[in-house]
Structure formats: C-alpha cells, structure tokens
Length: 353
Image (cartoon, rainbow, N blue to C red; front, side, top):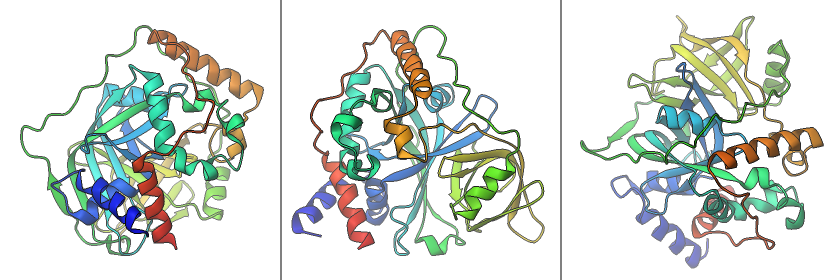
C-alpha cells in the first residue's frame, strides 16, 4: 500500500468511532459489506448483506436499500433495533465485529441519497457492473434510487479473528444517555404492494443448490435485548426438516427461537432454531423467502426483463409520489469514488494480495 493510501486509511479510521480499538475501527470502516438484520412486525429477524459505509460524522454505519424494494427500511422505521456483522476481508488476523444498534431511515431526499450511494460504491463498479459501460449501468434508476439507513451502535462486540469465534467477545457499550437519531417522517399514504416474485413451494431444492456451491450461511437470532444479530456458521448441513448448524461457541446469542438462515441474501430460510444436545443447533425450516430477481446474475440487475423492470419502476414511482419527490437523475458521466470508497477498495486489495 502506498504512503498516500496508508494516510487515507489512517485519517478515515481515526475520525470514526473514537472509543473503539483501532483494529476494530479499521474493520468497521474498510469492510465492503455488512450482514444487516432488521425485524418484521412479527419479530422475525431477517438478514441481507449490503454495501457498508461510515456516516459523514464517523458515528454511524450506513447501508442503503432500493426505493423500489423498501421492505428493510420499512422494518427499521417500525422497529429501529438492528444488527450488523462486519467481517472485513475474512483475514485470519482481522477482528470479526458484531454491532447492535438503532437504525434511522433517511428518505426525505432521494436525489442526495443517489448521489452519495454512487460515490460510495463507484470504486466497485468495474466488478458490480460486469464490465458494462456506464451508459448502460446508469439506466438502472430503479437500482440507484436509494433509501439510506444509518445505524448508531448501542453495543459493539468483537472477536480477535475469524478463527477464534469460540472465545467470548470483547464488548463495548454506549454510555448511558446516548442519543439515537429518529428516522425521517414516514411518507404519506399506503406503501407500494410487495412484488409477487416467483416462489417455489418446496424449499429443499434451493437449499441443495446453495450448499452444493459452498455458499456460507449466516444465522440471525435475537439476543436477550431484542437485537437481531447475524453470525456466520462454521458449517451447514441439510436435514429432513431443515439445517444442522455448527454454531461457534462465542456466538452473541443462544440459538433458540425465530430465526433466518441467509446465504448471501440470495436464499433466506425462515424457521425455528433450537440448540442440540451434542452442541450446535438445528433450524426447522418453515418456508423460504421470495428471491429478488436482481440478485445473483448481474444481467438481471442492469438489464432486467421487461416484466421485472415494469414492476420495479411501478414501485419506484409509487414510493416517490408518497414522498412528493421527482424521479432522481443519474449523472451522464461516471462518478468519482468517495474517499471512504477508495479506502475500502485499497484495504481489500492489500489484504487479498
């Protein structure tokens, strides 16, 4: 890493989360993704991996979801307790960081959100675009129109490295009297109806697919304080009624109660998890959640079929109308990455090389 890149990383990390150790802050500020969990009205924790970026004041971890598929933001506005898992580049020497916090929804200015999201993710475009030119990628206004969720940590727990998750974590708690930001006022009128994406009646074939390709599974359970916390399973195997889970001993909760098992957010299985007598846990699957067609294949994201594009644009227009906002404008020229975006890219390259 060049001196300039090192200086960027140092200055960016120093101004964020000053009460936490530097190696923990480095993971929080340089991780490309976070597992992000929110709660349904029925109390079910749902986890989806999202791009992560630190707030402008260095006090929040921010993520974004599409205005055209706002379920995560709707859940956070209703119940602000959220959980994040930041695993950095999965280097054996990096801490694994779990954050329990309170989310606040920012959707009063979708144009500003779009501009920020573009800057925060611009450094990843050569990968996420699949090599497509900006003239094609910019057309996906349904993707670039974003709701931002900012999470202020109430508790941060960390393990020294990914191979030491059987140990109890070190825990930092926000001081008494910490203020947590409220969400922007809820938009008027009923929300756009959820899209009826295709859903198979049997969850087992999809489970076999994700296990066959070796996708990692993250189990999300609520802790004693009601925060939904995702945690990576050491191993996952199929059973007659669900999944057998190898749960690290240092997990931030007891594996019991309503839970979801997420495979990169592409396949999410819902059920009840119970600890096993011989260690580990078993998730009895009740159903699999519908899969957003934009996930998995990048061609679906940038050039979806006409039916999918129509559904996405219909929801986007409905949600913008509720907020009395015009369709945001995606710039003609490809945006420059923000400093934070460059930091995350440089750190990943350095760690992976």
